[in-house]
Amino acid sequence: MKSELLSEIRKIQSELKQLQQEAFIQMITEGVDDPGILKCVFMAGGPGSGKSFTAKEIFGVGKELTQSFSVDGLKLVNSDTAFEKGLKDNGINSKELGIIEKEDPELWDKITKGDSSIRGKAKALTQKQQSFYEAGRLGMVIDGTGDEVNKIKKKKQHAESLGYDCYMVFVNTSLEVALERNANRDRVLPEDLVTEIWKACQNNLGAFQSMFSGKFVIVDNTIYRPINKNVQKAVDDFVRKPIYNPIGKKWIQNARALKKAKLIK
Image (cartoon, rainbow, N blue to C red; front, side, top):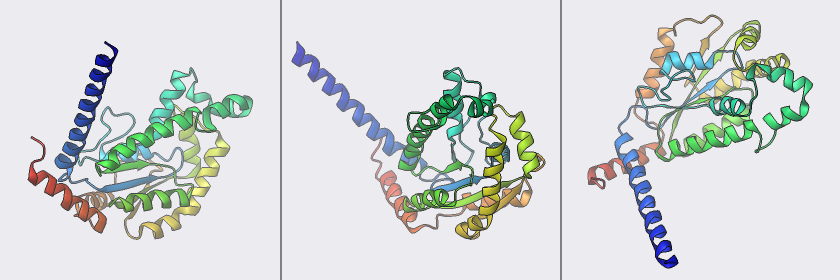
């Protein structure tokens, strides 16, 4: 009886593995002609700059939307969604993060320090999600801060090694506005941290412009308003242009060969 049960389990595992492989190949063959395939857009800007608002305006994606992908097929990669859910699941009011940092260092460490923290787990979950997108070379909008140049540089190099063309949307605002928005949003960060990150982003602006070499645009978000038509056109042109990266070109060629061979019925 035991051997029969083990045999049945192995059979189910084998079938599940086959289904996963078929689903993966289907994702590649169905998505290879999407306009956003192999396009990676980095969102940069400090807390309170309005990156989520800008992403929603440009791509139609954002934390407040039920849809996490744009009409061009770009997937949103943002660990804040998982982080805020983790806070809620642990009974922590996101508006009290600033107070917690000052008055409860032990709890602050459990929230932010190390892989087992709420922040660490949120990042790990988001990384798994991103890895799945990368496996199918799906287009991505990566929402970050921009206070660490080397971190963005490594992410860009990683994306390019997979065949992606990369672009950056830098969302800018005054420090005064950033602090005001931070105080009024659901997840309030300590003022000194917001100031520190804002200053770092400003200092990194030139480095980002050089790093992305023309595939870069600044959005002035001091006042919430519809996206400038020139900005929208520049981003749309990038997303819809043929892939430039030679690695990406080769990947598309192979994926189309799979599709033409009709390996999946």
